[in-house]
Length: 342
Ligand SMILES: [Mg+2]
Image (cartoon, rainbow, N blue to C red; front, side, top):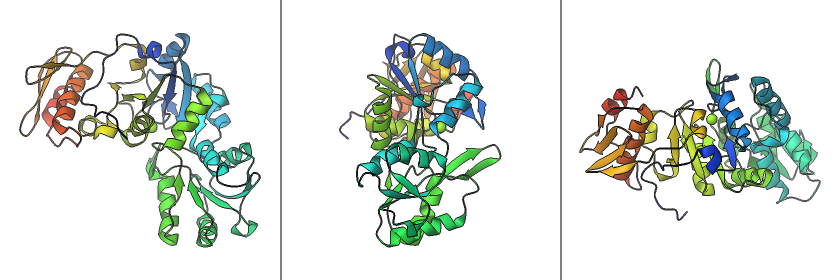
């Protein structure tokens, strides 16, 4: 990747929903959490759409079909068609279809989303290593996936059948806490076989390619809550990104982000799509955004001034990312972030 290193969030005179034609929205931690809509999400999405922005939803979760995800979103209050949902199951099905003959049998370790995506590409999902599969695909199977499914994968992979994974997110957030995700299930098979899967999901290029192919986006904005999937996926696809703080990323993680994890914009929640973004400017030794000025000291990041907390965070990003260059900022930001309530 030969991209210049981002050292501060960018400004935008126009509302992001007007500056970009398509929002590629992550779901968990962005639109909903534990099945319920996140504050301001539904109204913000409606306003962005009313302004002419196309909304598409991009998920690494291969369990549910696009139709099931669209139904859930529609129930939450944001009317969605199945064609506006792109899953890692679709991305991995295309990846497989490019490497095997038409109509080939594929051993499925996962859920309905994977089976539907394979059929859409003209492939035949099968359930046993004895069904002569030419590929094995592994996607999130939900809490009831039997252990014997991993055994089927191992039998086929040990015979040299190529192995694919929809995504490798190690964890999946739920109402009761953090549960093992598909990445953890992939590790089980990896440990048992010593093989390596081809992976499609965020942050890897097959997922971004699938998204652009299906949406026809000309100037997309990736909107996500995770640095190592959503934001890194945007970086790899060389498109702009908006990080929202309604999910898994907190202030210290954002300030310590290496270049591939630095978003173009950062905002509290999806209301950030509807507004412009303030400029971060150099000011003396540091950086100013709104009423805040941030500087990098020898051991810690310092913050002076007052105003909107997000402006303070943007100024801190510039100070931290500039100090870190193409590395990761290790300066203590605890006191500065506490001033912002972050
Ligand atoms: Mg997320």
